[in-house]
Length: 311
Image (cartoon, rainbow, N blue to C red; front, side, top):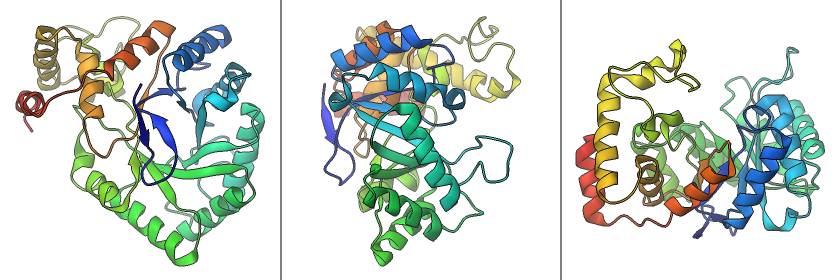
């Protein structure tokens, strides 16, 4: 397993990370434990979850799964999305950030969170308030590093400026959706991260499953998949998109790989990427994802892929 610096921080993270969105949803306690065990055996040290995943159950199962292995892994979780019906159970206010951190520490059963991330930009709370609360958590030893998710480039830049001016802990990473089919972040966010030294942690590296090749043009989404009878998923299943995936799949198979392996290898070749969040519902998927990082794409191959996806 390759390890990279998380942005300009001193933290070294595995190129392939493990996402916890399936824990408590598609993976029960025993399966989660098996998935985490396989991740550790594969050299994966970056485990990412969020307080909203299965309403906290993901954190609870992850906490149980890492017992006896805490020193071998880095725990990343998030705060900011809605956790309840009361008005202060969402967002990035000092109240919600600090209370949510304490709740996550209890569910994970750890003394400190390695990377605490703001899940989405909160337009109703001043960044100064959010960053001040995060700085307090870092100084208290409850959080080691801080990051953000779903931020635009200007939001990242302003946050770093505030931290610098006020001598506060600053974001070391940003987590956006980024994959072969979703490349909007290449316009502004990725150049911003390269210039300012933030590590990029892509989520949905397989395009929410589209980049596995399971969806075919002119065929209904298979039963049991996210796209089956799901109108909200339909924008991801445009004919042009699925035809592009078929071209990528054929190209990968000619080289002895799957399109899913190609998707991970392509992200690994992007200079701003530190670690790639990849979910799993069974241990075998974790092992396959870890192997995908071993495929090092050449400049000529990257050019061929760009031609296939039209960019």
